[in-house]
Length: 253
Image (cartoon, rainbow, N blue to C red; front, top):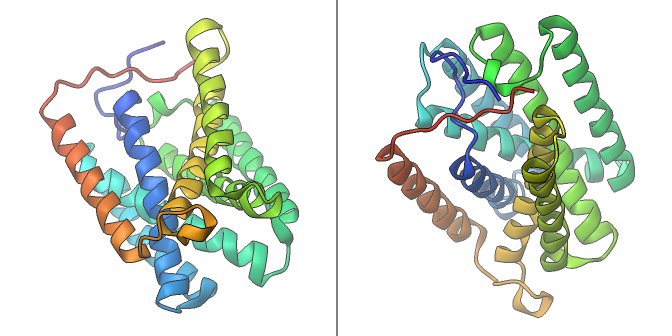
């Protein structure tokens, strides 16, 4: 693995990155559902709101001259909330269903990565250090987030596994990716994008577990309360990580 340019606009892909990423996807689920369902904005209204927030933040992220952790993760959280409401809108409001929505989004992920690779010659996140490359990254991550949401709903609701068992299934998938990372020579780039997709439904099912009624196996927290608790956890993680020297290890091969 290669050390990226100091101008890299993405955080180091370390254990801390994945902890915050899963928490961000969980917040995306609870926050997205809080707006679209609890506040009764509907899936289309929630999608429009989070898309607008995402565009503002991603433009600020791309225009920034260096990495700002707070800005990056705010953009990622807006992306996850947008992905949550967009997946729900496609699956439920448009009537595509879990299988149809997941298939369509998987093809979108492949297309986004293929165009990125054809244009830049790599889809390694350690090379995301220019505006054009950042645009490709955020397009791919948005489709991957939305696909992850659809997969999480498909497994927990469509296959009737429930949120707790669904979370275990995706956690097992991530464990398999980690095993491939540590004990095989499988492409680190491929493993990164596999982990991005699998971590999203893990966060989504964890979010459902927090706000589902107790008689359905959940903790019965209100969505706003669950979202606030997760946001506090993310901020705490960022504060802890900011006090440690970063050791940049990026998937680049």
